[in-house]
Amino acid sequence: MKKIILTGLRPTGNLHLGHYFGAGQNYLKMQNDYDFYLEIADVQALTDNFDNPEKVRKNVYEITKDLLAIGLDPNKVHFFIQSQIPEIAELTVFYSNLVTVSRLQRNPTVKNEIAQKKELFGTNGESITYGFLGYPVSQAADITVFDGELIPVGDDQLPLLEQCREIVRKFNSIYGDILKEPQQVLSSSTRVKGLDGNEKMGKSLGNAIYLIDDEETINKKIMNAITDTNKIKKDDPADPEKCMVYYYHNLVNTTENTNKVCSECKKGARGCVTCKKELIKAMNDFLNPIKEKRKHYEEHPELVTEILNKGTMEAQIKAKNTMKKIKEAMKINY
Ligand code: TRP
View 1 (cartoon, rainbow, N blue to C red):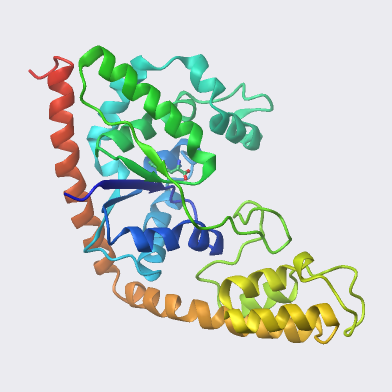
View 2 (tube, rainbow, N blue to C red):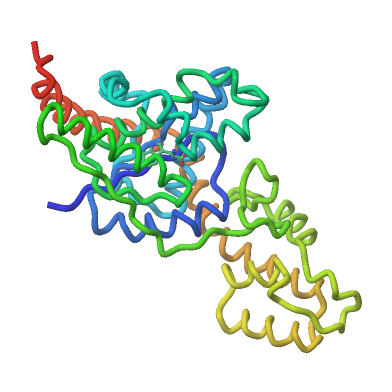
């Protein structure tokens, strides 16, 4: 039996290069070796987008198309929609007895997010909702209702996994050894920097290249990317390590071309405009096959619906099964 791997994505926007190199590439490898549950976490997205249900609904389809376009195989991966698994909501209620409010308030991921969402939750988090504060409990239910053992997530999610393990231990100590403790799968991939040189590429930072960006958009974004500010004239030598153009050459261009970019840049033998134009070409060569694949699903939206329905049905079976054991253990199997 293959081990179960589970991860979730909030459907709040399209995927960008940060998602691809930071996570997607890893998923592509893992889909061959594990029983892979991929949750489109619409209920979690609603915790801070409850007033914008249209956005969440639209992005359920957008993100699924993006994931299919990068090459995830619906015959290997169970794509499912969180809201369609009522057992997750049910289990969240049971788990909420096993967590203190102060423990949730101390969760570093939750704390950070509250600080970033002042408009929604108040300057000092005084308007925090019950739902948002409690989403780690719901995420623990996401993971354990599928017996998720291996969880491929970025380091920002570690406090949520730790909280999940605490819930599991508490549950098992009271009701018997039913649940598995999940572990992070360390990703070999990298966090991708933004066009502005920021350590993180992110939607809210406005510094991302999206997998669906058209050629004109890519052109504009790369032409405006940060280069070594000490380089004034075309033939000034420069430091590629201070240049986002070189950084993206590394991601999408061949090793041979990238080495050439590096040595010419250091010698002052390459102008930034030429360098950017070459990157634009390499970026398009990288993105075009992904966009081509995506187009197929855009033209056949019924395929996307079918994939989500099938994955959701498979996930429902698994969740029902675990829930039966949980209810027996909790003596609520009437
Ligand atoms: N919290 C995750 C994020 O924001 C998404 C998520 C929801 C998740 N459920 C999950 C991740 C279960 C791992 C396992 O990226």
